[in-house]
Length: 402
Image 1 (cartoon, one colour):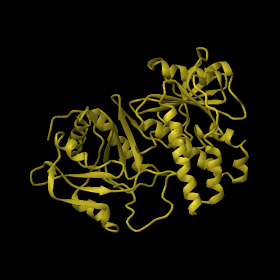
Image 2: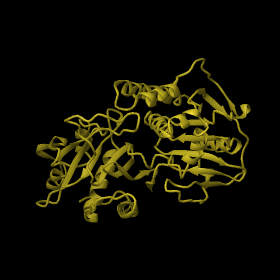
Image 3: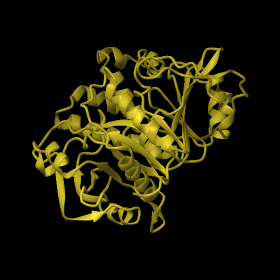
Image 4: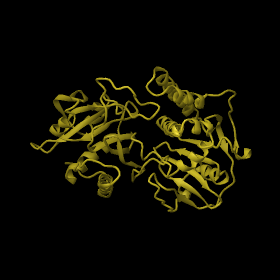
């Protein structure tokens, strides 16, 4: 065992988040007991130290799961091809892991680690193969023999950037460690009990919402989540402003550095997805087209300045400068995905110019939702709550797996 690297307090918070998630009456987790603290501390510390290293000037991306060989093998008994076993185990250290991990993309593979009873040391014994994260637009709607399915439902450590990692199980996030803090996961804020309530109010004014019997909202939610995710994985800080199409912003609150003549036609493509169904050849083709359009729009957000779009997914400007006046409204944490109202103060003074500009813009434009994607991981949302306050969702990606 090595001396603790991460504070025992951090590990305690991770364990508490795991226990709270497992005991939650709605989430219906199977009972997975965590190993003893010294083992868990060693596993997390080695993984954390490895996440600080670089290979050829690039940060290491990997996913590792703590599970014994027998238990891990039994977990894939229905689909044995989802697990590859090494003929000879590899020592699990902060030096060997970065070199070994390069062979396995964390989107598709999770490296299995166990502590041997014979010497008490950790070893890599295999690799779980699984499908990448999906949503309504990118999911495989047709299952074929050979699909690998879900990630292993055991304690999993996944890197995001140097010194930043996620703790998860299966497809569910337990929490994230970044900038020295561990934040427990909560349901996506795009649920209708949370930030989604404000977005949904605008979407209900779109004729597609009525003609699709509300299914359009689920596509919109997937579009927004994928847009934020695609922007985040590009590794740039970014700001995305979303305005209600029927209630345009006050023009002098942003300076549009770049404007495009033409349209990405994302809304029309989503309508085609709805008309053609998920399982048809054309339906699959249109969902693929929608994903590609979202990736193109996400790339615009990497330009210095704000990406401004509306709820019809028209790109209004990119590289824009937000010019709203300084707001003295209080910043309050918004309700989570369960509808639990936080109402706790959010100290906006701790954050830089990008966050402050987003806060001021949301305060001045109640019909807007502003997202700030930080380079180190968090995605924060700002939404004006009338003339009373600005609601803040400190980490909109706590419900996303990667």
